[in-house]
Length: 484
Ligand code: ADP
Image 1 (cartoon, rainbow, N blue to C red):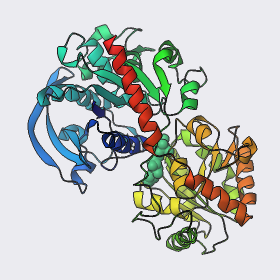
Image 2 (image 1 turned 180 degrees about the vertical axis):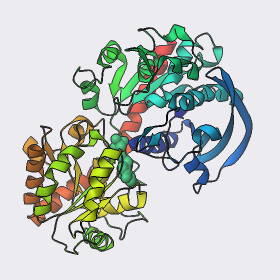
Image 3 (image 1 turned 90 degrees about the horizontal axis):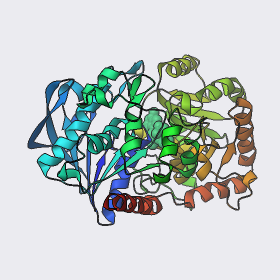
């Protein structure tokens, strides 16, 4: 199959969260099984200034954004042997961040992604690459299926291409004022309730859901949740309308990349059979972060975007209690100003038990996964969650709220499972979170039982081997649909 991945972030080139991990690892898994996979993404500043080999391509393109023809350029790099096309325009993508600052989104995001989506379609023709599958992700690329099914519906170039749309997080929908239609080269006829209109604005995610041949999200639990009024973020009706074409496929992670036995960025490599290596990581991280170097003090890690989704208000309430316990907490996060402020105020009190790191730092993240005994994810909702999957791999036991992909992957002793791999709680309350932490701290005291749980996580398989096959089956379904 010829498969084009269209994503606004792809690891290792540009990353703000789990989408980048998926867009950087699923293509590799599909390539391994023999598909012709290519990726297309914006040519951000971080890609240009990163340590990547970028080739110039002679092809440029031109698309209408708000009624003015805007010229773009094409660059190319590779991910292994996968071609990666980079869609460039200085004015739109030469910025310090991908979507905005901690104060909010860039005000011209509709123009930036209108330019990108239209540019992708234009470039495919110039490259004469006719994919069997165009696989789009989240609101930033949701307009691609919409444009193909509406503006290009009689265009023979796309007549044999099936469109797959993956929802990584339904809460971010790409909602803009009506005028933003023209950023995508669309006129006012698209401002109707059966098209892009949504409570007096336009909603790009809605367009993707309505137009793709098949839609999926990143866990079975989240797939069920988003069809309910409570968790459908206002799009449950549209999703219910497409229920027959809506699937859940659990994310995987790249087991070669996330591998404690080879990871060059951690202090010491280890496996499930050599957990003393994990203890060495803990010792070194404690030293590096100014924490007391004590091997028996439980070390709790948390690595997260700082957004209301991630349960930071629960953490805030519990902090005074946590600080009284015999434990250490290492947090790494960046994001919303509100949480940056809340957490940075804590940094002023020197502490041997608390380390707050307010930045995006891949090397530090790996050291925390390797050093921590427990990994906290008290999310309000979680489409899949990669943090807990990486934590399993590095032998850190997740303590999570039972929602979305966390509910599908973390199994508590209380669930009656034979091989528990973590601790879960149901109610989104500080008390329930506290209770789960206390149960984990209690279990930690019994080294033998604890190590067994660590190993249960380490030997589980959340690589792309399973989910890659599920995506192949999903692509087959999409192709069948357009051939009907
Ligand atoms: P989301 O996609 O909602 O942010 P996931 O759990 O699916 O959450 O994925 C988060 C990914 O981003 C993981 O790979 C995690 O390690 C990484 N990450 C989050 N915050 C940071 C940070 N401040 N520094 C480095 N990596 C981070």
